Image (cartoon, rainbow, N blue to C red; front, side, top):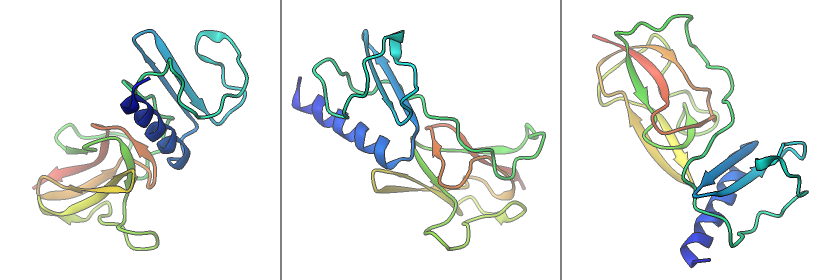
Length: 163
C-alpha cells in the first residue's frame, strides 16, 4: 500500500470519528470499505467479519464516493420551494454551521435581506472553514440544512428570493 493511500485512509477514518457520522460506505475498483458505529450494520457483500479496527488495510482504496447519513430534518423549509428562488449550495463536503462560533447569532435568518457578498454560513472540513456568500441580493426564504449537519458538495443550504 502506498504512503499516500495510507494517509488518505487515516484522514477518512479521522473525519468519520470527528464528524459525528454513523456510517460511511465506499466502493471503488472492486474494493469496498465500510466504517460504522452500529455493530448491527450489514457488511458490504453480506458477509459478517466482526468488528474491525479503523486501521488501513492493503485492500483499501481512497474515497471515491461517500454516502453520508441522512441529515436531520431541514430547519426552516417551507412545504413548497419557489423555482425562482436562488439555491445557495455547499462548495464542498463538510459540516454546515449557521453561526461563526457556538452560542453566537446565526449569520442569517429566514426573512432577512442579504447582499451578494453577505456571508451566510460556514462549511468546515478537517478544521478548515470555508465562508459561503449569498451570491445574490435578496431575502432569505428557507434554510435547507440543519446546523452542524454534514452536507455534501453541491447540496442546497438555503434559498434566497432575488430582489
